[in-house]
Length: 127
Image 1: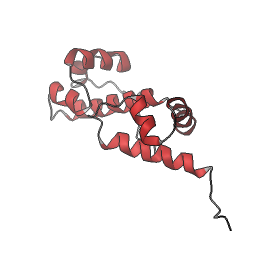
Image 2: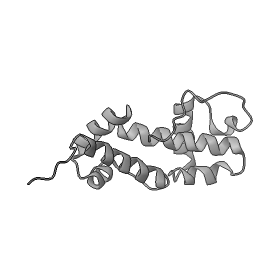
Image 3: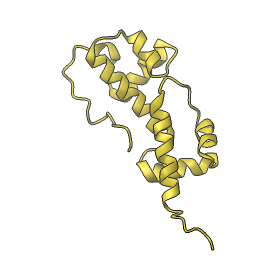
Image 4: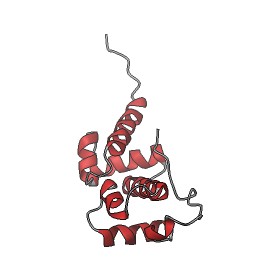
């Protein structure tokens, strides 16, 4: 007798596991190849699954989560920009500032004292 399994739920479990892994350490350098290896799916297939489950492509999700966490930390005002960029996986302040500016349309240093509402560009972790 074969055990019945719900094969359609398995990809959702894999994506949920990947999201938890991504969220557990945004400081880690994460290539799409590394994420695919962790999932057990091919490079292209994991990206299709991720997009269909979350609505985000994999690289876009990681970038958006890093930028969201950075913006939240900047708004708290407890850490300097250098400490924040390290916490969200960047090693170079120039690259971080350019990425932040491109993503939010405002430099990270200007956000600290700004009342600009960025919630439309910030994303919560996918559950």
